[in-house]
Image (cartoon, rainbow, N blue to C red; front, top):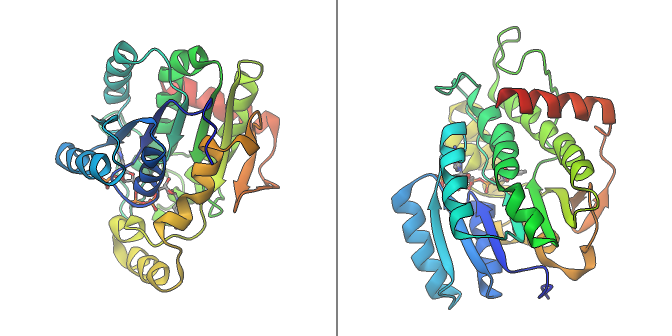
Length: 278
Ligand SMILES: NC(=O)c1ccc[n+]([C@@H]2O[C@H](COP(=O)([O-])OP(=O)(O)OC[C@H]3O[C@@H](n4cnc5c(N)ncnc54)[C@H](OP(=O)(O)O)[C@@H]3O)[C@@H](O)[C@H]2O)c1
């Protein structure tokens, strides 16, 4: 049962597939004003039409933004803020990994740009609408596959590039960043929590390419959860009255978990690095 006060306007990133799509569908079914954000205009248009029909909810909008680009996020945020004064739930879910080292035109390693800078930039840009909502929630889809964050070598210039290592460093950052964000939002009524959705059978692993992508994708096909199961704790954190006011946590299977990366000084260094990246 969703909290009718907490859920009004909801933005789900990466809503075109996997956990994001399942989250979007679950929330659309509850009648919220939903903005589904994707990077592919045709795909996001198709998903919007499906959600409107499946959820019998005409209040579903689509939005297009490449979250690996600071410029694209700034342009999207301007449009969003012109149309919406308040944002009650932001689900930072869009994520990617790549078996091949790639740099964005802005010079960031692609996985970092999408999974970490994307969360940070979008949340910072939409912060006025979150604060205006007074009671709002930010849910960051992180992972248990988290390790090896090296703020001195985010682009893998000193370390040999490895797609899983780049992904794991980004997911460690998601968890640490959530706590830094929660500290800044304390007292505003806006909460921020991170979630591990479990191992989920989505296209994520195949999309990254290479042998590890193939093996990871096949493993998830055999042993992974469905996207709906993966979305369960995400939706719960986004909208359930049971977690009202809870902030700065790391959750899995609807339970708050100990996070091995709790370290305020390190979290603040990460925050400063993200602010400096612009
Ligand atoms: N699957 C798992 O086992 C697992 C485990 C732990 C955590 N997670 C996390 O769960 C989240 C969702 O992943 P998933 O498994 O559902 O994978 P997925 O099906 O591949 O979904 C990822 C979503 O992110 C979007 N996306 C990727 N790069 C983007 C960009 N630059 N700009 C905008 N959107 C972008 C994708 O768009 P397209 O549809 O255009 O590709 C897609 O909608 C990720 O943060 C992932 O790290 C997944």
